[in-house]
Length: 423
Image (tube, rainbow, N blue to C red; front, side):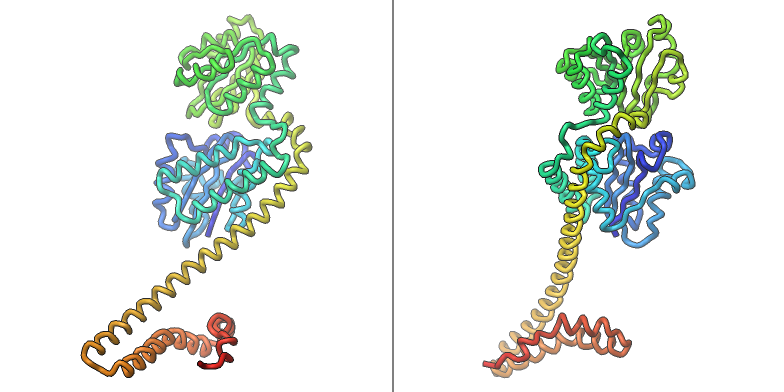
């Protein structure tokens, strides 16, 4: 059974999503630990600021074991996760992954970043050899569907991302954003987008802070900003009117004390802060300070919802395309399953043929009449090929398995061959 277990922005609070998120440093151990479960044959884990989702192929066992594993890995009581866990099975799991990849399940309808994040999750699982044929084909099919949706619908036109929403909100708070300075913490894709939006808005200055200063410098050079290390945050905070943070840090980078100190130096000029990270980079208590306007990723909903209506027609078209592709994928999977059965059946027949051939050649080497050897060969081969099938048909008939008898008749009897004249 294909199965997905997810906890996302629609089902869980920010606090819960923080607790179940996987950092990049945890992913290898998590995949190894998950696939060590006897029932889990294949697995991939997607962990973003808005969702943590497990995709796997489960053979036997209770699907609840995934939730138990997730709770155990993060040292959380399973009761705290049950109400916000979302399950998708087989065809629904396929549909869900395709919807996520196309941005239909995102906070920002049609946002493109999620596809890159899914490709990243796929690559990590592939690197650690936790993908089998089912998930490998599913991800490849999903990538093709996402490309088709982007190409054939308007879902990606006038893109509005979380990064855009953060900058848009800053523009509403400041009368003239061009007179402001921004401190960006992190240098990943989201912060790159934030930096470009701020540059395009004509902001006065940008400081990029990152654990790896070289990455910060690359982004700063692109947007005409200044690069610093995380150890310089306290000084940079004094200059910042806007702070937007999105790192993979497991612990907060900005606490109440450091921000309070910066405010005193700034003579209480306000600071607008957006924390896009999961887990959070800025302690929630920072929002209790006067002159601080702290927003989390969930607070961006109002800005984002304005965009949703304009993309709804494209989203409806995308949903139809996804449904068609789910059906195509299920058909392909059934064909692959039949192909495995056919290979096993042919292998069985080939083994019986080889045994009969060996006996016939041995008889010929002993000088027996070739005509009689051929007759015996064909009789033996027919009997051996049909013995197992006829025995199982009789057993099915005795057990009144009408379904099996009807299936056997449809699969085994070729009416045209019965009426064909012998040469």
